[in-house]
Amino acid sequence: MSLPPPPVLEHCYRHPDRETGRRCTRCGKPACGECLVQVAVGSNCLDCVKAARPDVKTRAKFWNARQPTLVTYSLIAINAAIYVWTMASNRNEVDLALYKPSLHAGEYYRLISSGFLHFGLFHIGMNMLLLFQLGQLLEPAIGRVRFGLLYFASLLGGSLGALILSPLAVTGGASGAVFGLMAAAAIGMHRRGVNIFRTGIGTLLVLNLVITFTIPGISVGGHVGGAIAGAICGFVILAPRHAALPAWASYATPIAIVVVSVMASVAIAG
Image (cartoon, rainbow, N blue to C red):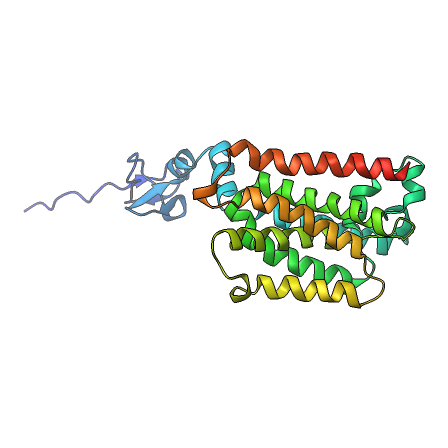
Protein backbone atom coordinates (compact mmCIF):
# COMPACT_ATOMS: atom_id res chain seq x y z
CA MET A 1 0.00 0.00 0.00
CA SER A 2 1.41 3.39 -0.98
CA LEU A 3 1.50 6.18 1.59
CA PRO A 4 -0.04 9.61 0.85
CA PRO A 5 2.46 12.21 -0.24
CA PRO A 6 3.73 14.49 2.54
CA PRO A 7 2.08 17.92 2.73
CA VAL A 8 3.78 20.60 0.72
CA LEU A 9 4.76 23.55 2.93
CA GLU A 10 4.58 27.02 1.45
CA HIS A 11 7.20 29.69 1.93
CA CYS A 12 6.89 33.02 3.74
CA TYR A 13 6.07 35.89 1.40
CA ARG A 14 8.86 37.98 2.94
CA HIS A 15 11.37 35.21 3.61
CA PRO A 16 11.34 32.80 0.65
CA ASP A 17 13.86 30.53 2.39
CA ARG A 18 11.49 29.84 5.31
CA GLU A 19 8.80 27.21 5.12
CA THR A 20 5.56 27.92 6.92
CA GLY A 21 2.17 26.39 7.46
CA ARG A 22 0.53 29.63 8.56
CA ARG A 23 -1.33 32.28 6.60
CA CYS A 24 -2.54 35.83 7.16
CA THR A 25 -6.18 35.62 8.22
CA ARG A 26 -6.93 38.81 6.30
CA CYS A 27 -5.31 38.41 2.89
CA GLY A 28 -4.34 34.71 2.97
CA LYS A 29 -0.65 35.15 2.19
CA PRO A 30 1.67 32.54 3.72
CA ALA A 31 3.89 34.04 6.39
CA CYS A 32 6.29 32.91 9.09
CA GLY A 33 5.85 33.66 12.76
CA GLU A 34 8.12 36.71 12.49
CA CYS A 35 5.92 38.25 9.81
CA LEU A 36 2.59 37.71 11.54
CA VAL A 37 1.07 39.95 14.20
CA GLN A 38 -1.59 38.72 16.59
CA VAL A 39 -4.81 40.73 16.22
CA ALA A 40 -8.26 40.52 17.77
CA VAL A 41 -9.21 37.67 15.42
CA GLY A 42 -6.35 35.60 14.04
CA SER A 43 -3.00 36.91 12.83
CA ASN A 44 -2.29 39.48 10.14
CA CYS A 45 0.79 39.90 7.99
CA LEU A 46 2.85 43.06 8.28
CA ASP A 47 1.39 44.48 5.07
CA CYS A 48 -2.17 44.09 6.33
CA VAL A 49 -1.25 45.57 9.72
CA LYS A 50 0.22 48.61 7.94
CA ALA A 51 -2.80 48.93 5.65
CA ALA A 52 -5.19 48.80 8.61
CA ARG A 53 -3.33 51.52 10.51
CA PRO A 54 -5.15 54.91 10.45
CA ASP A 55 -3.57 57.65 8.35
CA VAL A 56 -1.58 60.48 9.92
CA LYS A 57 -4.58 62.81 10.02
CA THR A 58 -6.74 60.25 11.80
CA ARG A 59 -3.98 59.31 14.26
CA ALA A 60 -3.47 63.01 15.03
CA LYS A 61 -7.21 63.37 15.61
CA PHE A 62 -7.24 60.40 18.02
CA TRP A 63 -4.16 61.74 19.85
CA ASN A 64 -5.75 65.16 20.11
CA ALA A 65 -8.92 63.68 21.60
CA ARG A 66 -6.86 61.96 24.30
CA GLN A 67 -5.35 65.27 25.49
CA PRO A 68 -8.11 67.01 27.49
CA THR A 69 -5.69 69.44 29.17
CA LEU A 70 -3.26 70.17 26.36
CA VAL A 71 -3.33 73.96 26.90
CA THR A 72 -2.68 73.52 30.62
CA TYR A 73 0.36 71.34 30.01
CA SER A 74 1.61 73.71 27.30
CA LEU A 75 1.38 76.71 29.63
CA ILE A 76 3.22 74.83 32.37
CA ALA A 77 5.92 73.84 29.88
CA ILE A 78 6.36 77.44 28.69
CA ASN A 79 6.62 78.74 32.25
CA ALA A 80 9.14 76.04 33.14
CA ALA A 81 11.19 76.64 29.98
CA ILE A 82 11.41 80.38 30.62
CA TYR A 83 12.39 79.78 34.24
CA VAL A 84 15.17 77.35 33.23
CA TRP A 85 16.30 79.73 30.48
CA THR A 86 16.58 82.71 32.82
CA MET A 87 18.43 80.62 35.42
CA ALA A 88 20.81 78.89 32.98
CA SER A 89 21.66 81.97 30.90
CA ASN A 90 22.09 84.28 33.90
CA ARG A 91 19.76 86.63 32.06
CA ASN A 92 18.56 89.60 34.07
CA GLU A 93 14.97 88.78 35.04
CA VAL A 94 14.12 92.49 34.97
CA ASP A 95 14.32 92.29 31.16
CA LEU A 96 11.01 90.37 31.15
CA ALA A 97 9.33 91.85 34.22
CA LEU A 98 6.47 94.33 34.30
CA TYR A 99 7.86 97.80 34.98
CA LYS A 100 6.14 101.05 34.03
CA PRO A 101 9.26 102.95 32.85
CA SER A 102 10.05 100.08 30.48
CA LEU A 103 6.52 100.12 29.12
CA HIS A 104 6.83 103.86 28.66
CA ALA A 105 9.89 103.11 26.52
CA GLY A 106 7.73 100.94 24.25
CA GLU A 107 8.46 97.48 25.67
CA TYR A 108 4.82 96.44 25.73
CA TYR A 109 5.70 92.74 25.42
CA ARG A 110 6.27 92.89 29.19
CA LEU A 111 2.51 92.87 29.71
CA ILE A 112 2.63 89.18 28.71
CA SER A 113 6.24 88.14 29.36
CA SER A 114 5.93 89.14 33.01
CA GLY A 115 3.18 86.55 33.40
CA PHE A 116 5.66 83.79 32.52
CA LEU A 117 8.51 85.08 34.70
CA HIS A 118 9.17 83.69 38.16
CA PHE A 119 11.56 84.67 40.93
CA GLY A 120 12.68 81.42 42.51
CA LEU A 121 11.76 77.74 42.58
CA PHE A 122 9.06 78.08 45.25
CA HIS A 123 7.40 80.89 43.27
CA ILE A 124 7.07 78.88 40.07
CA GLY A 125 6.35 75.64 41.93
CA MET A 126 3.28 76.99 43.71
CA ASN A 127 1.93 78.74 40.63
CA MET A 128 2.36 75.68 38.41
CA LEU A 129 0.75 73.41 41.01
CA LEU A 130 -2.32 75.65 41.11
CA LEU A 131 -2.34 75.96 37.31
CA PHE A 132 -2.25 72.17 36.99
CA GLN A 133 -5.10 71.66 39.45
CA LEU A 134 -7.31 74.40 38.02
CA GLY A 135 -6.54 73.34 34.46
CA GLN A 136 -7.73 69.80 35.21
CA LEU A 137 -10.99 71.30 36.45
CA LEU A 138 -11.67 73.99 33.85
CA GLU A 139 -10.10 73.06 30.51
CA PRO A 140 -12.10 69.85 29.91
CA ALA A 141 -15.28 71.69 30.91
CA ILE A 142 -14.97 74.78 28.69
CA GLY A 143 -12.62 73.61 25.93
CA ARG A 144 -9.13 74.61 24.92
CA VAL A 145 -9.89 77.86 23.11
CA ARG A 146 -12.00 79.39 25.85
CA PHE A 147 -9.61 78.15 28.53
CA GLY A 148 -6.71 79.82 26.71
CA LEU A 149 -8.69 83.03 26.34
CA LEU A 150 -9.63 82.93 30.02
CA TYR A 151 -5.99 82.44 31.01
CA PHE A 152 -4.64 85.35 28.97
CA ALA A 153 -7.53 87.65 29.91
CA SER A 154 -6.68 86.99 33.56
CA LEU A 155 -2.96 87.43 32.92
CA LEU A 156 -3.44 90.79 31.23
CA GLY A 157 -6.02 91.84 33.82
CA GLY A 158 -3.36 91.12 36.43
CA SER A 159 -0.81 93.20 34.53
CA LEU A 160 -3.25 96.10 34.46
CA GLY A 161 -3.94 95.75 38.18
CA ALA A 162 -0.22 95.73 38.97
CA LEU A 163 0.32 98.88 36.91
CA ILE A 164 -2.52 100.65 38.71
CA LEU A 165 -1.43 99.82 42.27
CA SER A 166 2.35 99.44 41.96
CA PRO A 167 3.57 100.92 38.65
CA LEU A 168 7.19 101.29 39.79
CA ALA A 169 7.50 97.79 41.23
CA VAL A 170 9.26 95.06 39.26
CA THR A 171 6.49 92.48 38.88
CA GLY A 172 6.43 88.95 37.51
CA GLY A 173 4.66 85.63 37.88
CA ALA A 174 1.65 83.64 36.71
CA SER A 175 -0.26 84.52 39.89
CA GLY A 176 -2.59 86.96 38.15
CA ALA A 177 -3.63 84.32 35.61
CA VAL A 178 -3.96 81.66 38.32
CA PHE A 179 -6.11 83.98 40.46
CA GLY A 180 -8.29 84.52 37.42
CA LEU A 181 -8.76 80.76 37.01
CA MET A 182 -9.65 80.42 40.71
CA ALA A 183 -12.16 83.27 40.52
CA ALA A 184 -13.71 81.89 37.32
CA ALA A 185 -14.12 78.44 38.89
CA ALA A 186 -15.64 79.95 42.04
CA ILE A 187 -18.12 82.11 40.10
CA GLY A 188 -19.06 79.23 37.81
CA MET A 189 -19.75 76.90 40.72
CA HIS A 190 -21.69 79.54 42.62
CA ARG A 191 -23.92 80.24 39.61
CA ARG A 192 -24.69 76.53 39.45
CA GLY A 193 -25.80 76.52 43.07
CA VAL A 194 -22.67 74.79 44.39
CA ASN A 195 -21.31 75.84 47.78
CA ILE A 196 -17.73 76.69 46.82
CA PHE A 197 -16.52 76.14 50.38
CA ARG A 198 -17.51 72.48 50.11
CA THR A 199 -15.36 71.99 47.03
CA GLY A 200 -12.13 73.56 48.27
CA ILE A 201 -12.16 76.32 45.63
CA GLY A 202 -13.64 78.87 48.02
CA THR A 203 -11.15 78.09 50.77
CA LEU A 204 -8.28 78.18 48.26
CA LEU A 205 -9.36 81.56 46.91
CA VAL A 206 -9.88 83.14 50.33
CA LEU A 207 -6.60 81.74 51.66
CA ASN A 208 -4.67 83.14 48.71
CA LEU A 209 -6.36 86.52 49.07
CA VAL A 210 -5.42 86.62 52.76
CA ILE A 211 -1.80 85.79 51.85
CA THR A 212 -1.91 88.50 49.17
CA PHE A 213 -2.92 91.23 51.62
CA THR A 214 -0.82 90.13 54.60
CA ILE A 215 2.56 89.08 53.23
CA PRO A 216 4.75 91.93 51.93
CA GLY A 217 6.35 91.74 48.51
CA ILE A 218 3.30 90.23 46.79
CA SER A 219 1.64 92.09 43.93
CA VAL A 220 -1.78 92.96 45.31
CA GLY A 221 -2.80 94.65 42.08
CA GLY A 222 -1.68 91.67 40.00
CA HIS A 223 -3.68 89.20 42.06
CA VAL A 224 -6.80 91.33 42.38
CA GLY A 225 -6.72 92.42 38.74
CA GLY A 226 -6.42 88.82 37.58
CA ALA A 227 -9.22 87.72 39.90
CA ILE A 228 -11.58 90.45 38.63
CA ALA A 229 -10.85 89.59 35.00
CA GLY A 230 -11.32 85.87 35.67
CA ALA A 231 -14.54 86.43 37.58
CA ILE A 232 -16.06 88.41 34.70
CA CYS A 233 -15.05 85.70 32.22
CA GLY A 234 -16.31 82.94 34.48
CA PHE A 235 -19.68 84.66 34.90
CA VAL A 236 -20.21 84.39 31.13
CA ILE A 237 -18.27 81.27 30.13
CA LEU A 238 -19.48 79.10 33.02
CA ALA A 239 -23.07 80.33 33.07
CA PRO A 240 -25.61 77.57 33.90
CA ARG A 241 -27.91 76.36 31.14
CA HIS A 242 -30.96 78.22 32.42
CA ALA A 243 -29.05 81.52 32.24
CA ALA A 244 -26.73 80.76 29.34
CA LEU A 245 -25.73 83.60 27.04
CA PRO A 246 -25.13 83.23 23.29
CA ALA A 247 -22.13 81.05 22.48
CA TRP A 248 -20.25 83.94 20.89
CA ALA A 249 -20.35 85.85 24.20
CA SER A 250 -18.14 83.24 25.89
CA TYR A 251 -15.43 84.07 23.34
CA ALA A 252 -16.10 87.78 23.01
CA THR A 253 -15.94 88.47 26.76
CA PRO A 254 -12.33 87.36 27.39
CA ILE A 255 -11.25 88.95 24.10
CA ALA A 256 -12.84 92.24 25.18
CA ILE A 257 -11.04 92.04 28.54
CA VAL A 258 -7.74 91.43 26.75
CA VAL A 259 -8.28 94.48 24.52
CA VAL A 260 -9.40 96.75 27.37
CA SER A 261 -6.55 95.60 29.62
CA VAL A 262 -3.92 96.24 26.96
CA MET A 263 -5.33 99.65 26.00
CA ALA A 264 -5.62 100.73 29.64
CA SER A 265 -2.08 99.52 30.39
CA VAL A 266 -0.67 101.41 27.43
CA ALA A 267 -2.54 104.54 28.54
CA ILE A 268 -1.18 104.23 32.09
CA ALA A 269 2.35 103.70 30.78
CA GLY A 270 2.01 106.95 28.91
